[in-house]
Image 1 (cartoon, helix red, strand yellow):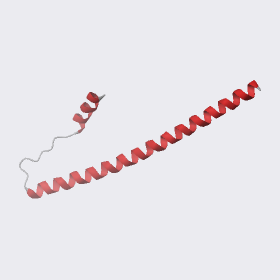
Image 2 (cartoon, one colour):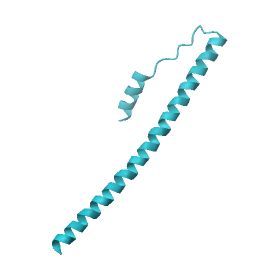
Image 3 (cartoon, helix red, strand yellow):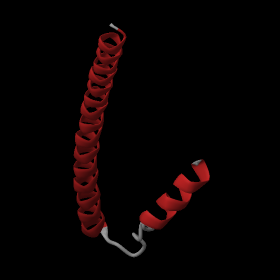
Image 4 (cartoon, helix red, strand yellow):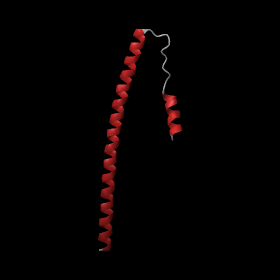
Length: 78
């Protein structure tokens, strides 16, 4: 799993090419990277929130399903 994660990150992460950049170019690159980090953190937050909501929904569904099956069995067995 860890090796798979590293392989995927290696494909997605581009090398930081800053050789030969002057101060203003470096500052612009820093702003671009900051903007990207903020966007990605926002996406991560949204995904984590959605994941938690889905966990609650699945748990509720399992509870209702179990309750329904239990009631059905009790009804059949009388």
